Image 1 (tube, rainbow, N blue to C red):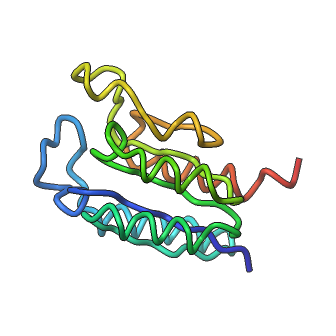
Image 2 (image 1 turned 180 degrees about the horizontal axis):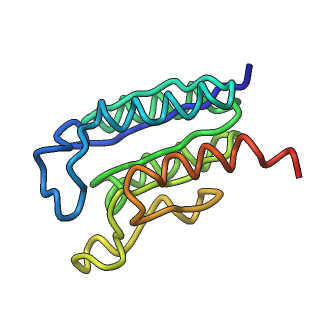
Image 3 (image 1 turned 180 degrees about the vertical axis):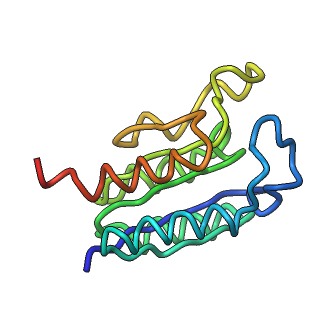
Length: 144
């Protein structure tokens, strides 16, 4: 069974109470349940992690480096973490960067991703559906 890693970055544990205009009203657990349900319907496995700590995110990326794919929402580290960028660049597994909000319609400092240039792609602004679309891409990429 194919397995994919989902990594949620800092402050995503506050979803549902943090700025619903940008992030929606779903909690992280509700988003994770939607991801798990979709994965189950497609007969794939997901391994989900949320961390507020840069080193934990880097460790998870490195440990998943030879897997089927990583879906990464680096949160605030998107704009500041050269270390996470370097971890993504160093592994063989494809990575899709996902953001709940449209980072390009927000404050100027949020419009630059250090991570995106070393990712397969980026999905921004589609809420939790961005995770589903990234997972769907990975599941179907070898079928076409």
